[in-house]
Length: 445
Image (cartoon, rainbow, N blue to C red):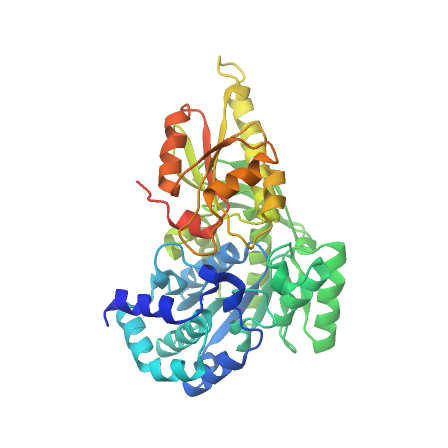
């Protein structure tokens, strides 16, 4: 099989959560353990950092990977899902996994897979571990796919665990309350291994502390160690001052991941970095500053408040759940404040700027909750990604009408964007969001 035939084989023969949802979710680690045992347990051959969380784990993983590779460490990075190409999931120093390795691995493990019957994700995890082992990475950043306790990645023994935040997502699998969801994420906390908690809520902090105390894991809370102020936003970068509160040291940072929500991830990354330094990693201030200002270039991350065009401004964001959409709305509000300051003395008024939402969602998300958060005075273009889990665009339009969100529906995201551009003034803002898979189908001109 060539590369495309190999990928088609994986999609066709292995249950894939991103396509079919909960039916692909395996509620134990048996398959992953059996796969990796047959491969010689490659996950034990390199140092790893394990990252879980409802939102922000992808950005946090990529920022931390950028810092480590800029510091001279050969750095593996495993994330999911991919947006355009399967190989985005597995990288070393920002370079996608080699096509020939994917072909060879799938062919070599075909009989094993047919015997074990793993999910797409389980086999992908094993593939990543073997690739990182074969290339002798110094360290690998491993992002969980779903939850933590029963996630396929949770067979590693990392040198550091990170939990970015807790929010409502995948409740059908992880639990209906924030403490229940937190308990699943806390499943990555290992005996004696330090853990950084990016954000916590009153009802989740004790969950993390209880698990850390139970297994003797040192626990750190990023928001208690770092605070951010003096934030300056542009379409290309985010600048801010970060105070290390215990030492009262203030540093200025520039991020090329310019979503305002990245300041939370920044604190998490800085806390994680400080622990890695304690463990012997050598990371200079210059390494850190350059990496954070060039994370996209170093790691290939995109889809996080990505400004892909101006006049009108077109933004891609993979926000797809309650917390993610809340952050998008905060960003819109902040941009409005900035524009108000910029155009006070001009004829154009901020109120004239219209927001256009190109939105598509999957059926197993809290669609009604997301729709309830969106502004009624925006123009909507309802569409859907071309995966079985996607909610039909016409059905999404009907649901949106119950919340007084008005617009037309379109066969695909690119047709929806074209319609939005034709309706938008040069000063308007077009936001594409609601589904990772929708953003993945955008054809960037």
